[in-house]
Length: 188
Image (tube, rainbow, N blue to C red):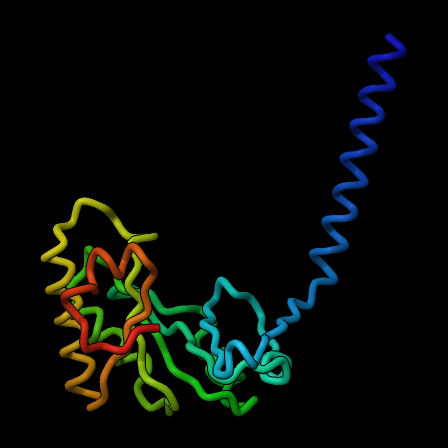
């Protein structure tokens, strides 16, 4: 019985120590970024509500040259941090672009109108971006349908802003939806 008690006490002590270390690391983390400017002479980041509170002056001092701020998603979601991130990046004098996370199960035109409504009146220094990723999107939607809706989004936004939209994607999104369909678009 004494061995079991000692074992439980040891496990509890290890758990408490681990919790203290994790709490310390979490509370003192300043998320400093080190950028090799010889390898990456122009460096940018994308930010959203998921990123948390951002010190834009600090990231500018660390060598970040531009920022894409998430504005919207789908046809009715507005990123909670969009206004704050936009204002703080502008105040830090970091060139800004905005992005929209595309939902495969929503109309491209509706998503474009939603995006345009929430970026209206804002000044952007770099292109607007369409974020195309399978992650977070429902499956089972035909590739041709998604590609057509992406084109509707791009057409609608470009008609209003009179500038080309850039596409942000990952490898699977590129292979499935972008490659062979949007080859003239700039990628991020």
